[in-house]
Length: 259
Image (cartoon, rainbow, N blue to C red):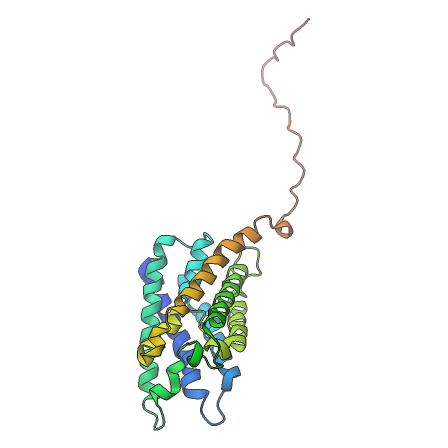
């Protein structure tokens, strides 16, 4: 598959993740009888499950710069293709944020500044007013575990066909834990798209949602291969080697040396 086609799949997958996940947060979460925090967490998880099943065979289904970097540091993805994937993911997130803004702006009560537009933040802009260090730690650890799940569920020793479910459930769990802390990023592209529309504080604090996920993803990329280096459960005892048969010689044998 050409890099162009794989990058196009990453664009679509990231577009779907931001449109579906952030769309649930911006449009549905605050609607009377809407989905709430649980619904937003499920929306992000479902975008990953459906996106990976639809596009994973084309690009691998990263949809996240932290996952791309983690796979590269783990030796599962060419380092030279990290930047093209990041560019495709960023464009997908920005286009999705644009579509979401146009849709949400059609509502009579939509206020971009008041809604926060699903942007990620710390301090006064954290949903639970968590401080900088707590938010950075949350993003780093959650991204680390997210990439560990990606690496483990896509390993050759993992059950086949279930990786999208495992990855989607992991992202749902991460959101259930960390929405009150940072509004949950673990994905620099997902943070960048909405921040460009929110502007101001969202752009000023955007650095954390690049540093935390990328550092966490990179550490996971180094840690997982080290953890699984021996893989004792994956070893199958080799059958005993057969005794070598004496070759048949069609001519007279050489005489044995005598003493």
